[in-house]
Length: 256
Image (tube, rainbow, N blue to C red; front, side, top):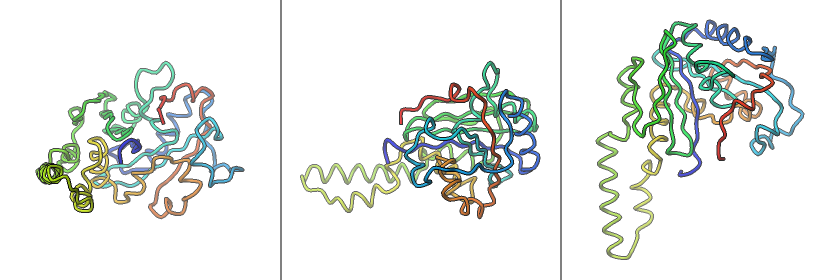
């Protein structure tokens, strides 16, 4: 799975989606040119082509999805990705920080790009925020439960360490013989091939999201037009906005 796994997820420690909905509308409509739409716009394009179109080729649209998570978390996915991690133009804080301060709750955003590259953003109820782009990110600004904290330490799990050691020993033994049992090696390495950041993301999904499909939705625009019934079954609630005129200038530049 090297080289292509990417994911972008925000979480708010609040299960009042009505309050979150109103706060998001209030926050985003303060941005010049951004306005709430009454429904998902009709798409003239062939939906089967969506996954191959980049953001410049798609109609301008801002989507916010609110999913139910465990332990009182609300899971936020957006299109464009990273929308709540980003600052508004000339803003002093990420949108997630402003939202956490308005709702008086803690929040975090975890970004994975190309397996190994990750970023953890924490924001507390006072709007204070912290970035952690280290190889072993951890929570130090907000308090999280032990299962969530352990998810960030997944690479340190004794069982993972043991399995990696056993796999390396078997691989070395076969290499010395010059004969490889590829089926055996594939079975032994199952689940070990992900990058560190990806393993953390999967562990967070298993801990927080009862619906793994939603957490791992990378392209919300594509999924909402092609698989809306599946998202609706998970009780995901959506907001649609006409994005600010300059929104493309505020987005991070990804290499894929």
